[in-house]
Image (cartoon, rainbow, N blue to C red; front, side, top):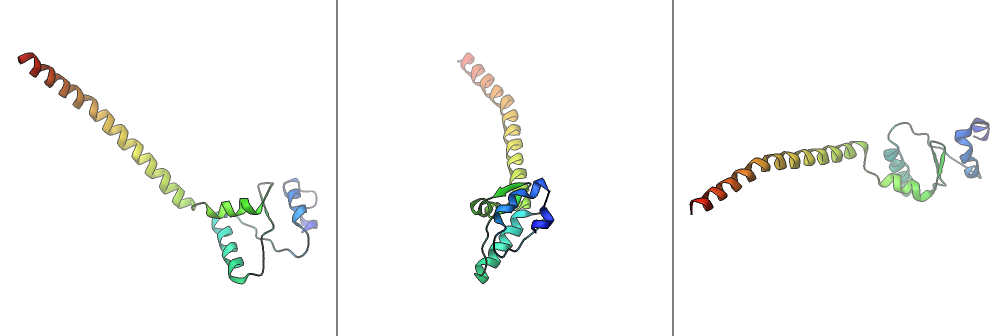
Amino acid sequence: MRQAIKGKDSWTGLDSLLTGTNAFVLIKGDVGSAVKAVQAFQKETQKSETKGGLFEGKLLSQDEIKAIAKLPSKEALMAQIAGAMNSITSKIAIGINEVPSGLARSLKQHAESAES
């Protein structure tokens, strides 16, 4: 691995992890799911440990990798965002609808008080 990353700036942070026997997981796509799968394998076999990781040239600690594994999937995040956007548009629609209704109630109340 040292030969493969030699001279490549985005991989230099990995040097500190290259001691002893190593295995590498190269991920393209959903990082969270891959990290969860690796952690499940480690828990099941109890024969390996995560030393760290490299993400877009930044060295990640074990705690940062655990935090990534706890993140919801891309699909779950998109559903949460869609739900939040739907909630906001509903509240805006209710607010816009309430303006004429409130005005009508106020006018009716004013007319009733003027008659008395």
